[in-house]
Length: 196
Length: 196
Image (cartoon, rainbow over all chains, first blue to last red; front, top):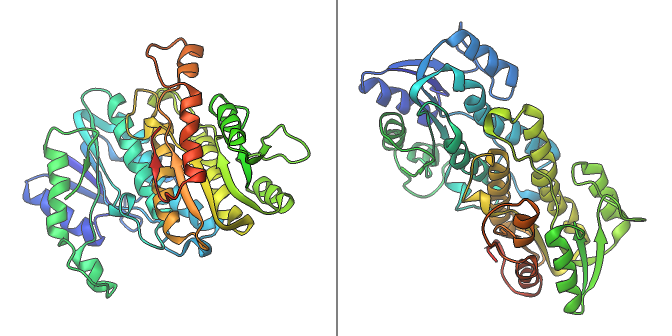
């Protein structure tokens, strides 16, 4: 099974890559910095070009996407634009543009996050983006052709992130979050918001 | 109590206007076609200009916003852009730009819709937008200053709409949906997704 993984170098992405490989899957990692294949989620043409060069895959997994965390009063027009172009439409476009590349019965797995449902001060743009991704996923799954499935993993706060940001709380280790991505790729669910 | 109502000429908006007036509230209706005050939700500068001319209000209610309904395979980049600029960011910007116009303890009431949670084929862009509005509302409510509340009404299918589109089902009459907006304006809730 050949899997495209976008964002395989992030805190969660690294563990997703390891977990998919541990299942014996052939993982093609693509990010802004990989060569010869690269992708910038904020640029629709970059996504189209990646798919044109990629060929067929059985699954597309995204653990990528930027959105801006800042107090509501400080979030500017540009911060919302970045968040919508990158984490939101970047992942939506991975599905829209990638459908022809997927083998029958393949799957898309996107990433939202706990702030969709449990916001905190500073999360207005991210909560919007994460919830929007979940709404899109539920709908897109109804129309994906040829048995293709569409899910979104909604990670909780990750232990490694909390430690890096010196935030309180235990969180869930990224390696444990990664199991939700494996479940989406190898299981039968579709239209699901998977909470690790 | 002075209330700005954006989208007061739509199927739901007309009933919201009537219901707010029945409570004795002073309703200022603004849409693309009203004069001297008008607003185009898709244009941030239009929203800023409206607020500059409006003065203080106690509540902002939006029953407005376009988003594109079409099969996923036919939704183009422009359809997503329109949906994000208009129904999603238009209503988000009503909150962002309008905060200084609101009296202490005032409220914002936006409109999402049942497709956020219960999608159907053709609703990918609308489900994204509606769910995004709900995520934004939950987060923005945490940061609104001076006791200002932020809610979103998520209307089900409306009887009048189902009849106009010759769709099956009973739906809920718009006059009944309008009560949810009154509840948001006159009640104490904040950060709520109100289902009529």
